[in-house]
Amino acid sequence: MSAAATGVEDSPLAIVCGAGSLPFAVADAVIRRGRRVVLFGISGVADAAKIAEYPHRWGSVGQFGRLQRLLRDAGCRDVVFIGALVRPSLRQLRLDFKTLTLLPKIAAAFRGGDNHLLSGVGTIFEQHGFRLVGAHDVAPEILMPEGPLGKIHPSQQDREDIETGFAYLRAAGPYDVGQAVVVSGRHVLAVEAIEGTDRMLARVAELRVSGRIRAPAGRGVLVKAPKPTQDRRFDLPSVGPQTVEGVAKAGLAGLAVIAGETIVADPAEVAAAEDRLKVFVVGMKAVTAQ
Amino acid sequence: MSAAATGVEDSPLAIVCGAGSLPFAVADAVIRRGRRVVLFGISGVADAAKIAEYPHRWGSVGQFGRLQRLLRDAGCRDVVFIGALVRPSLRQLRLDFKTLTLLPKIAAAFRGGDNHLLSGVGTIFEQHGFRLVGAHDVAPEILMPEGPLGKIHPSQQDREDIETGFAYLRAAGPYDVGQAVVVSGRHVLAVEAIEGTDRMLARVAELRVSGRIRAPAGRGVLVKAPKPTQDRRFDLPSVGPQTVEGVAKAGLAGLAVIAGETIVADPAEVAAAEDRLKVFVVGMKAVTAQ
Image (tube, rainbow over all chains, first blue to last red; front, side, top):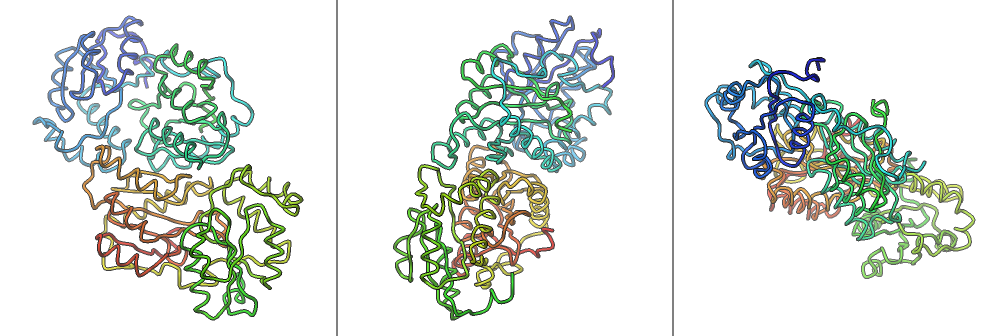
């Protein structure tokens, strides 16, 4: 990422908004830094009530021609994609003409995992003169700092579990699987694939209720890391208050992410939740995940 | 494993029985080969009605002294462990004196994953003059043969998913995680950890119902392999009619295992289920998983 992308530029920043609150956390941070924003909501996905508070436009997945026109009309050159986007079904796609001409490229991108899909879309954007920037480039303050976020610190045992978790994620990384794992006593209890972190945590909670996990509550760690192959302009792991609640419900001691490579939605609420629920949230040095 | 272990021996074979029908499939196969068996049921785990049909004794997990005495009384030297055994809680353990003296060793074995636990128990048995043999050594006919078991064959696309699945399991193997993965379009949809294969398949079925998996039914493969670190005397992956049903309910095309390294419980019922449910069950050459 060039240094220019992190500075204040004259052109407004385009934020293409998927689901959840992250797009607005990024928008607020960018506005605080003095740059204008235009939000592009993905219909049926982005939060319509929230998006109405910002300059915005709407479009559908697959309307690349429309998005390109809207971006140019709004004078945008830098584009950020942020927020959850469930892989759309072909039926849901409302393809416009421009997109149809790009279909062979998009189809090729679709065949791989999510990373291929996103990188493929990124390449297409750049070929049309836009610059894709990462949310962490335009709003670095939304990133997880190093060390514990709240008052609780991981124990030595937790640190061993964290190490095992990152090692596992490194090994599984090339397969474009999920970004998270639950480890207790150096034993991998659950691996996230397409179900997502919240459902994986719910599974751990169920396995505890059913007696399949017999370790006492307060042991074990949720470990999240970007995939090694991940295009970080699109998709960084993120944690928010509901992640902390899921960790507590799963009876874990806390959660560990890579500092500087993880987005924290609502840091104040996250810190409050972890102190209230007595779990830790810790940012580990990136070197751990190399 | 020595050649002698596969031959008919004078001493009866001791079969320590966990849950499920596999212990009896092994017992029947060994009896058919002309060797006597004595079943040692693990209380609260082994099927009491079924075990009553064989010469048998009962014991608890943790009663190593009792098991050793019973084994010697029955004239057994070769011991097979077979069937599912959920990691016991310390409260459930009814330790006898001999086990107490072995506790430091057992505790060390407990600290690792299941493989460490089982290998640790194996070492203890061998130090006491018993010989641990694998179910596949005493009853090779229970193993999955090479090629499709029923009438349905995997497509080229299925074979690509199978390749991806085995590659993933190889990469994750050193972490002593589960032995199974669901792959569709070379994309990993689910990874088994401690929840077991049946629950992972149920999760895939749910993800399909909720729209998170959008591929049409009849795509994707369940891939199972022994862990690279697995002590195969204790624990080979196994498939049975209920695995085939789970695969069908999850909307997958079929399941792939390693030929010669997977136990098939009730092969006739498995073949009938796959033909009825239109899914394949295929044994791949072991070299695929190296």
